Length: 178
Image 1 (cartoon, rainbow, N blue to C red):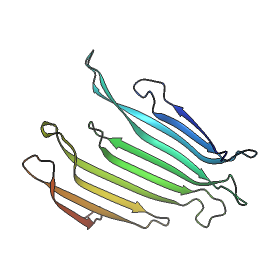
Image 2: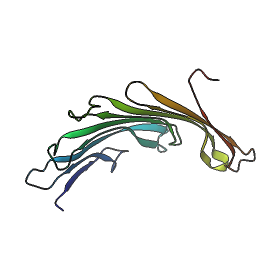
Image 3: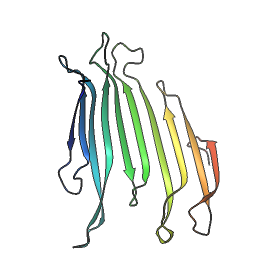
Image 4: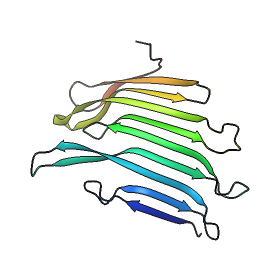
């Protein structure tokens, strides 16, 4: 179909082979952008003992722009997305924030953004290889004008170390609630 994709990959250890950037273009003759993406990675040093070094590279920041395809705004940016994340030593995402900005100058929402923030705590039990069992999560969503909603989820796990939840409680949440 003539669409071209150019990807670059990290060449530095320990991030070798991770996607650094991607540019997608429409077919010639215009070759206008469809997508522009760049990824930034952070490395957690899990063990720095000589001859036993272990590292956990993870995607910490993603920036992406999407462009109009066809029509009078062909090739013009429509949205810009930024996502930031933190992980714990097991690689579980403890905080993920996403902001989507309207960059279409003809849009009635130009310059406004939608966002989300998800924070999660985990109960890791390495003895039973239960490494990704969440115990609590707060999900917040925001819309232009400052409105938004938060939701809190709590999980209760079996005491026997089977890595199974026995109860999930999902409820609306405001930061002042206890």
